[in-house]
Image 1 (tube, rainbow, N blue to C red):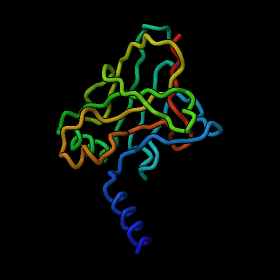
Image 2: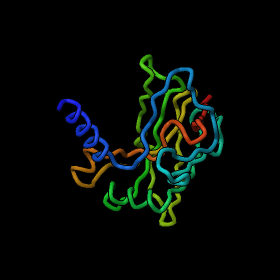
Image 3: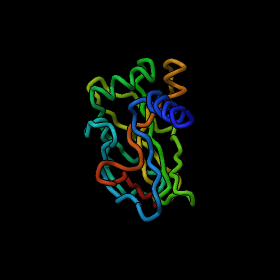
Image 4: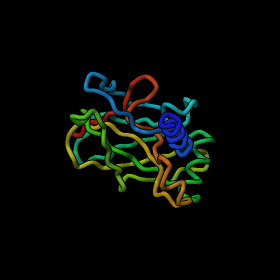
Length: 172
């Protein structure tokens, strides 16, 4: 009976998870390869969400331009999540995992934009914080149902893409 309960609990957790991409946890030996362009992983759609950065090395305070696109499926999910606001925001990761192997991220609320009707977006951000960081993309503030906002994952592009690459920018 205990085994059946555990199986049912696992099935319930899987069913409650939406199809959005989540950030990976990995050991220090599994560091991503720095890249200037990435696409999402774990969605079955290689073009679910893609993003690139114009310059990977910029002086502190200069503008960094991120561009990208969302597939039709990703656009529909974004529309539900944001109730039509269609906002996407950058996320920032350190270049090394925590001691437990996790990769916590920070949502950069000042680096958000509205996706255009053709599924493309441009985010111009000025980073005053010096150092190297990986960047991802998530859906803007959830305005959907309580079930969606409480159980869904707003991630579009996490730390790893399909080739273990991550979008890296160094601010000097």
